Length: 479
Image 1: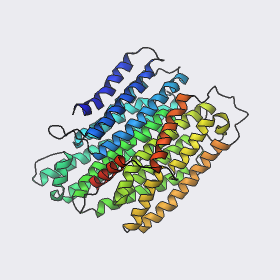
Image 2: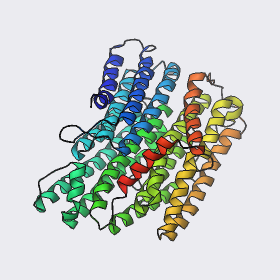
Image 3: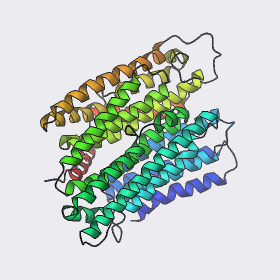
Image 4: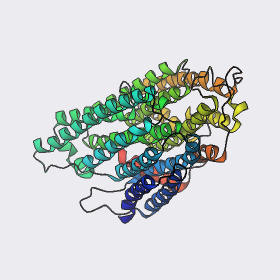
């Protein structure tokens, strides 16, 4: 149990240390030290599997392990990247950024091990709050607008999720059972809970955590927040914050699947997912801002997660694969996008062109990351998305499978229209060249993430495969 405690305490201690350092140059070095220790602890708890806490509020199951692993790797890569990135942004005080990243890591670790829905909600809400000042890092009119939109929509969403938790708790009272918000107890109660209250709780939490994930139509904060935040923060938003929302949705999904009557839940999940993918596809076509393009790509992938839950079967295993693949690949793309932004002082493909000539390593990472994100072999996303198609046709959802194929083809083409000019075009001659150049700390972190996604796509280690199977079995609880 002490290992799990350290997962949340060490990042908080690191935040305090960073806050006490006066030097803008030395402070960012706290990040790689703390995140490396955190990642080592994550590997330890995955191997050791600590027992639940007294009262069972805290328990690390296979789903939590996968979430911790993805989050730990992503935050560590971003921490090393941040050291060199913040040297380029020496005009900005980085105290709030360094502290906020570590508080967010602590809250996400707590969310991964929370088996009490109230505690889980508190951890997810903490991530919302501590990410807000990071979105505002550039301190201009557009970033403050993006921050307010992010705070407003996510706060309304998380409030609806809390209302859903209240409905769920009250349903135990209506059923004459002992009130509880513990995951395992609610799963046992589920067949006895009033259907109306359970359905209402599911809808509220789907909308609430869907806003956190960025599911359409609650996605409207994403293009602004991802577009105006630094690439470093965009990676943490897409690979960490949005995944937290998905974790919240997973927990209510586990309870509702235990109730036995699953048709309504599966229909809502598949419908919401397909709608999100369709909305993303529309806005990805002729998107000129490559950071907003990545935001709509995130909307698409949150839709894929939701569809996978609705399909069940093999898609649940694929969803666990996709949790890792999406988070790490988004890290590659957002970190590379941040480099391109600095190299050209623009996010628009009209002015940011020819990255392979001006910053070859970054250009190659952005191009290969694009193929990885769109499900091309041999990357892990190919295996996960293939499982979604397989489940759609094998479980009697052929229309869903066809729609997925068409929409993902549109997404690929839409992203290609933005990515290819940015990577291969001729650098603009009428704009002053910036001082940016590729350096090891700006290139190696996204390169390592990309190599992990590629290697695991080619060969999935047996322990990781068993962990994915165990996590999928926790979701497939319906008779």
